Length: 180
Length: 343
Image 1 (cartoon, rainbow over the protein chains, first blue to last red):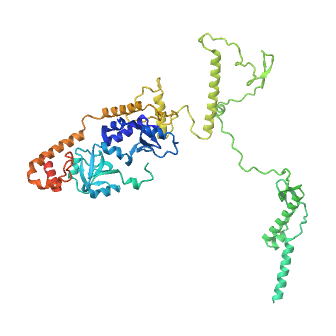
Image 2 (tube, rainbow over the protein chains, first blue to last red):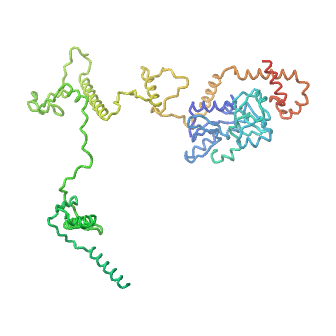
Image 3 (spheres, rainbow over the protein chains, first blue to last red):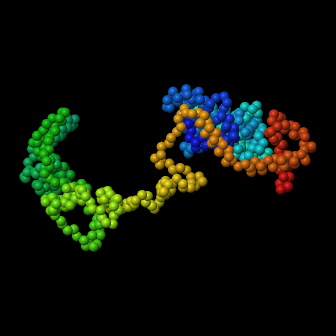
């Protein structure tokens, strides 16, 4: 486990800012305690200082996970968000998409959101903007990327994709063994 | 019939037995020549041509081979034997027959560049004596090498030439010249080897090759960039150029549990820099806003007639007024057509 380098921090922040914009500052600078990002096994964990100090007594090989996994760095040094980061993305999300109850299941099985399943969408969403997907009851279901801007969404036919799927809470069951 | 056959079988068996136990003594007109070291035997007796023709050829050859092998084995038994783990082992003497070598003789070494040149110019080696008279020590010494006559490395004083810089260390100069000569000689030797084996002659540093790979090009670029007076410190970088990998620089990380406040400050600084680099005016956003306003205007114009439909749609967007309402499809397409007309 080690702190991120500046380059790594930058790539991670750039990816995070697609979803929560400048709200990253609220993650870095928290009034309720000191939280930090740590890299372990190419994965970035968001840990409170207290837990980090406890975790130092566990050897590197034995440590599976600590804190909240935000995502991982790929071999080409790109950052990929994991569904476990949803707890921190959802409260600060700038752009949201609500899916209709009928389309919830298909999204949770890993498919894209169609226009027919789109309940609401934050206005002024531009194309390829990172969005957090909610159910109509405001339960965060996952996140993705807007395939169409809000304006275009109105005009497209019901079967066209509106939000590209990136991660959903169904992964907690589907890829149980790889999520940490 | 049966008895007859039994007798036949018995007779045959007896014959076979006798064949097997053929006497170990073989009589030859001329003794064989043996080379026990190679376990070889030479049979100088001419083969019996008549028998060769009468008998089956294979049988004749086989019996001849058997007899000779028997003689060879008899010879082997004469050697001193010993028992090693229930096996009788004979100690073979030195072989007397010289066998031809397995591999072809090595080719002569390719001539070096100097040898080629010397042959072209007709330069011939003059034999010089190994020992020369050393006037200083008054004895015979080697012409070159260790403890040679007129050894200029052993001089305790060197006269500074008139043209030379008086502060220059003449001893160091000589040593340097010597090491350079040695290095040059070594390089020439390697070049000669490379030339004889048809390998690309290695140059100094990064030699240009016919087909440079991506990594080679990258390395060459890196070397070229570093080859400035300030070791490449002020060299410009391409917009998306990555730092060279595997340059022997070790990565250094911040401590795992260090100063959390400075770490936080660094991250905030990074965020500030990222923010400042964002364009103030997002063209996409602005265009979308404009389009949305146009939509709203056109909806206001056609608005009053469609009140019922809008109300039905309203159930989705009850909570947040921010979220735009999704108009029914029919109305949508009509609006789109209208907009297109406008533009």
